[in-house]
Amino acid sequence: MRIMGLDLGEKTIGVAMSDPLGITAQGVEVIRRTKKEKEREELARLIREYEVDEIVLGYPKNMNGTLGERAKLTEVFAEELREGYLLPVKLWDERLSTIGAQRALLEADLSRAKRKKVIDKMAAVFILQGYLNSK
Image (cartoon, rainbow, N blue to C red; front, side):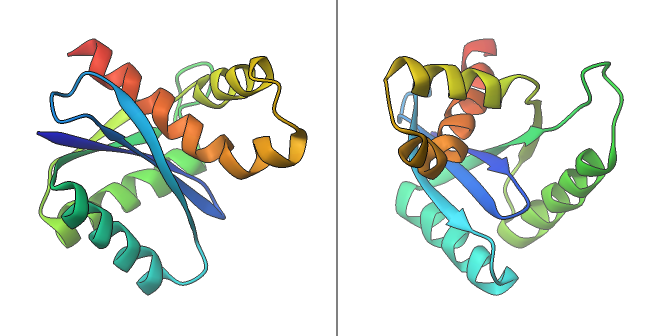
């Protein structure tokens, strides 16, 4: 059973996948959000390729636990995923996932340019790994 983790941003979607046993998360790619149709095709391709059974979508709560505009947009996106791919979609609190990803990349001593290219993918890994650890 593979689980796909997504970090939804305004310009990109970071994608991570679990291993078949659902123990570890690995970064897969970053999808550029240029056209909705292309974005959906890329997600469909990954779902088929990795035989995804479930999707975990980062849920951007405010630090005080309230829901802002980004959280509402994420809820809409989650519903589109459910309807479009007929898969269960779980919303997972993503507070501090980007900060964790930034720290990991800084510790790996990556340049700013390289960090910028992979930060969304790493945030998806943090989101998915947090979900996997909770199971």
